[in-house]
Figure 1: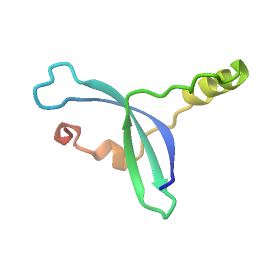
Figure 2: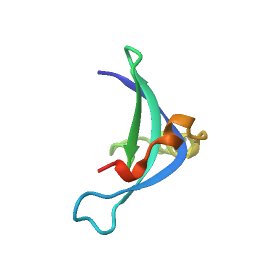
Figure 3: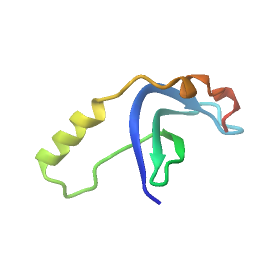
Figure 4: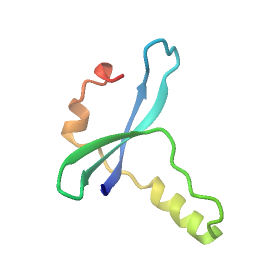
Length: 82
């Protein structure tokens, strides 16, 4: 499966049963190759070791770009997520 995702400005704190601190995740929105719309809750993104410094700087620049979350993301009842 291939998925294309975009970073949004929405950050949520996901907690699992018994977890007191939770984990901050950025919400990414996207679509699968066949057109299924998805939401991703991503706590970490990093560059694989061995990348050239210029590639890493470009990645950091692109990672800082984010768009406003869609209405669908704003409407998700995050208290319902586990």
